[in-house]
Image (cartoon, rainbow over all chains, first blue to last red; front, top):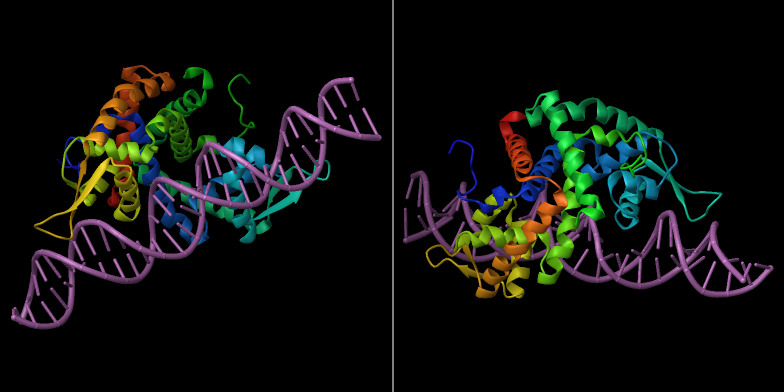
Length: 152
Length: 152
DNA sequence: GGCGATTAAATCGTGTGCGATCTAAATAGC
DNA sequence: GCTATTTAGATCGCACACGATTTAATCGCC
C-alpha cells in the first residue's frame, strides 16, 4: 500500500508491454524539464545524440539508429534545422540522399546536454550502474527480438 | 554483424532510456497487426483491458492506471464510445465525474483479444515466462522510481 | 541510350501525449 | 447563504509515430 497509487488489481501490471509503455512515459516526463532549458524535445535530443557521433549521416541511417522513418524524421529534422542546430544538404553524388550534420550550436548543445542530463536521469532511476546495464541489455535483447520478423 | 542492422557505434545503445523507447516502438509495431482486425489501437487496447477489470471507473481512475490524464484520455475514450465499445455517463451524485463502462461489444472484444493477442506477443518476445516476469518487475520498479518526485 | 523498377525523402491524414487553459460543478470559509 | 477555491473533464495547439502515397533521382536491363 505504500507505493501503489494506482487502484488495486490493475490487470495491466502483468503485461510486460505496459511496463515498457509506462516506463517510456515516465522517462519522457523526467526528460522534459531537463531538456526544456535547451528548447528541444526528447526525440530531438535522441536525434542530436545520434548525429553527434558521426557527421554526414543520411536520413535513413539516422532512422536505422532511432528505429524511425522519414515520415517521422523529416519534420523533426526540419524543426532542428529551423532551430539552427542541424544542417541538411543534398548529396552531390546522389541527389535523392540528404546528409545531416550538426551546426556548431547543435554540437555545443549536444555536448552541454550530455554533460548534465544523463547524470540527472541516472539519479531519477535510483539504480546503480551495474543494475542499469543489466536492464539495458535485457531491453536491447527484447527490442531486437520484437523487431525480428522471423519471431512472429 | 549478424544482428546489428543499425550503423556501428550507436551512442544511444548505452542509454537505458533509449532501450525503453525503442522497445516501446517495437511493441507498438508488434501489436498493430494483431489489433488491426479488432479496429483498435494499442493505447485503446490498454484502456479496454483496464476498463474490463471493473465497471464504473472514472476518467481519473483510468488515468491513474494508464498514467495518463484527461487531455489524452477524453479523445481516446470518445473514439471508443463512437466505436460502440465504451459507455460514458455523468455521475448523478457528482456531475463533474464521468463513469466509464464497457458495452457488451466492448466486453466481448476485450475477452476475444485477451484470448489470442497476449500469446502472440509473448511469442514475439522470444522470452520464457520467468525471464519475462523478472524484466517486468525491474521495469515496474524503474517506472515507479522515475515517477517518484522525491528522486529528482 | 532509353525505360521500367527501385530507392530516398517528403507529404498527408489519423491517433496519441502533453502543457496550458477553460468550463462547470462541488466544497470551504466566512 | 454566498462567494472563493478546488476539482473533474474537456478543449486547444504542438510534436511525435506511422500507414499510405507522392516525387524525384538512380539503377537495371535490354
